Image (tube, rainbow, N blue to C red; front, side, top):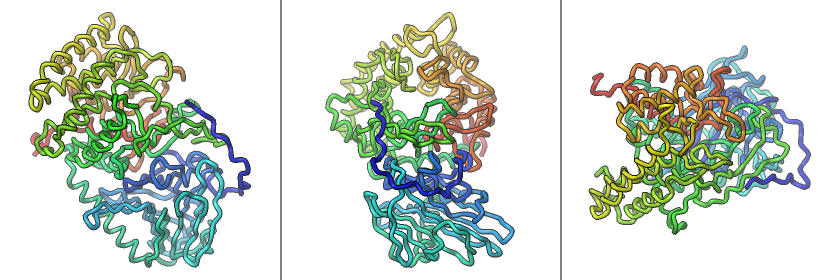
Length: 611
């Protein structure tokens, strides 16, 4: 259901905004976060997107979607110059350096995260440290939050060293060792290290210099140790590490849910109308994130997600799973269009909530089974091999088998014309196939049931989705269209890598859906027109498929091309326009970074081959 949000009856007068007149490009944004919340920081020093106290909350800063209505937190050059952004090596700590005639300075941005008292310390806090590097640079600081989608400026109270903003569900305070008088966007000379700390809830009462130094040291150490514990391939190391760090920031640690992206309403292409809210937990996306983290040797996220899934299953006795949930596990996701917001670069509409929560997407049963399967095939995780989890896994596989071959919205969430989607049936087959292996080990009495069911479904897919006249599998039973998701037949081992039908499908998809080396999702009108830009994960899927079908050199050549689309900080959106060389779609997109990680492991040689 899509609703249009009512504008507030008596909005506060909109004061002239000091924000930039246009949205920054995605390539100009850095991501910071701590698995509780996140923020996007532009290279001019503006925090242009931040939802508090968690990813799917209303935005406190949203200038990314409307420079006038959205609000921002600016800590940057007095004249609005852009700086040079970089991450502290192997961390999610962002640095931006500015050079001007009067001198130079650095802004260090992060959200604290580390272990303390044998618990994860992740306060709802954003820390910004200003540090002169030479001379006497001039800077400006301006905190201009808004009351969510209303766009209204909150009332504020000044203290001796803080600003308190009223009207939010929690206590929002900016604490600083700068003169409060300077916090109105005026330029002033930076004569020493200064600190700006935004908190939601419990405010900062400690002296800022010592506190911020401690938080920075501990947070830096946490991220660098986390990276050291990751497995990475010999090639593409920097890209994989940055993608791993970005994926971790999409994990909502409180419940174990995983968000698809940090933002809402960034269009897939300018003027396309394809503006969706991705700040929620798609079960499909979560499986892919967990599988990428498994390749990296990180497992705590899967264990946390298991509890999230068990909670959902307990509240859904018939296992009628929705494709997407809020981070608290509920399904209250009515899609709302916000009136009067201009949208990213003027491309609206701006939405929150997502109608996909009302869809039938049968592949999710397969993906949830696959997300649980590693626990029963890896003896390091015997603690997770409980009767309760095994029962859920079997229920998911049986549910997948019961819906396979029936119409649904599919992986691309078509809003009309549902058909039996080949990809959905493929994932249902994978659930039965993996369950057959697990049953042979943990529930021998069920092994035959799943083995035979997997074989029947495999035969059904070949009969209904193979199109001999084109020498390829097609996107739906009895259809003729092509779908890049069929590339997942290769890593799922639906057919051997040298099978002519798999090779033919890869070749057909590459011919029909590729532009300048980049893959589109499909080649037909989905109700919004034909997609005009590349869907980034699909090109990474092509890298995987080429490698699996024995074309490693072609896979690496394509991998080198697609890596050029990353932002200067190594981040990816959902979509890429080869013509303009620009990123589009919600940003950063977990799916895209998942694709990069999987493709890198496939295209790279093994360590045993290079050491």
